[in-house]
Length: 196
Image (cartoon, rainbow, N blue to C red; front, side, top):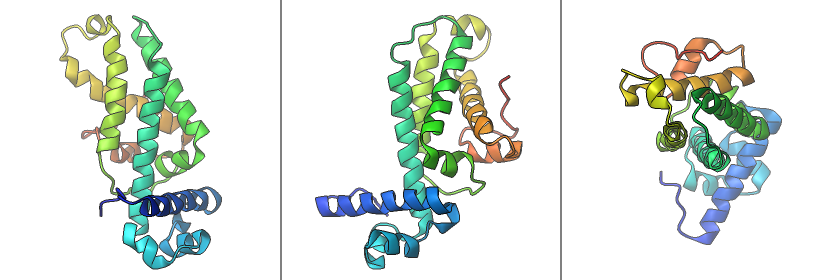
């Protein structure tokens, strides 16, 4: 279902549904994010909730998209004034920004990093975040020297996976490596490399 509301009243209802889902996620956990619980807590009728989100998974997917878009914008803002020719600085700063974002947004951390639930979601927000990371990496003039002889484009997915993987690992070191692979849209047939 298309969640882009055209009327102010519809937009307000979607906002209430998502805010309520986020509160439930923080207070009671991911399994308690249900249509019934959202309706009870928000004061909206179940039919109003079903009109915009037919399943709890659709609500969680929308939250994931929102968190990824917020993370991408936060990443872009916090990297806009960094000028360096050191790839190690790019990696460290990227990990720091992503780690801080998830530390400051506990609901995003619980839904994206701490949960073993794999939800269907649109890949555009991941690509948006990926583009922001890629733009930051491309800014470094020295990256071509470091990657000498390698295809420029082939290195970006590895770096992106490693960055997101490092942030996920910092927040939830007990999650097995194969689950990181499943959760990354860029992942190939082997677990992503770990950054030291």
